[in-house]
Amino acid sequence: ISDPWSQVDLTWGISSTNGLPQVLSANPAASAFNMSHGATRRMSVDVSDVDFDPLVYTWKVDGVDQNISGPVFNLTRPEVGTHVVTVSVTDGYGVANHAWVVTSTNTAPTLTLASPTGDQTVSHGASLTFIVALDDVDGDVISYGWSVGGAPVANGSARFTLDPVGMGTKT
Image (cartoon, rainbow, N blue to C red):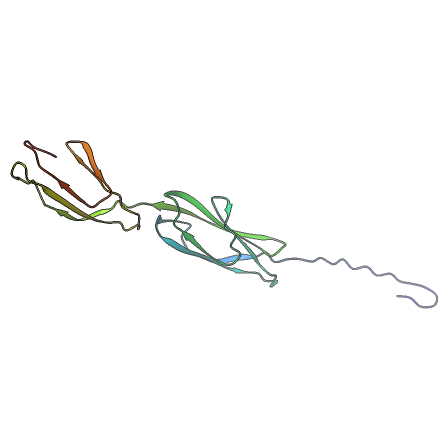
């Protein structure tokens, strides 16, 4: 500022601040949970930025980038074991993080049919067919293996025919 005879200089200090992004909620809400290794789990975060800066999301599973940039991630068929899923949200100036510990489990198949039932007595030289049906809630492929007297005799099918049955007791 000046007049013809003097000048006055004014100086102002200006600070620019940034409100950091904040995770308002996460789904699932629990920071640790179990899931079947054959399942898919939708995970998401609701993030706020008071400055309305554009947000960039980075999702990782066990430290490996999942190439997903948005508030929703589908964790699909994780290997059996414990995993850490993280999301980092940045506005270019600061970062908000959220993490879950996920335990991926396997449930053993359930026997839904066994035929014949119980011990069987058959004539010497006759055949005997065994049938089983199993249900696997994890959606795993079920494999079959048959053995007689502890020795493997067949694989791959839910049906096995012991033909002909010899003398003695077989298990």
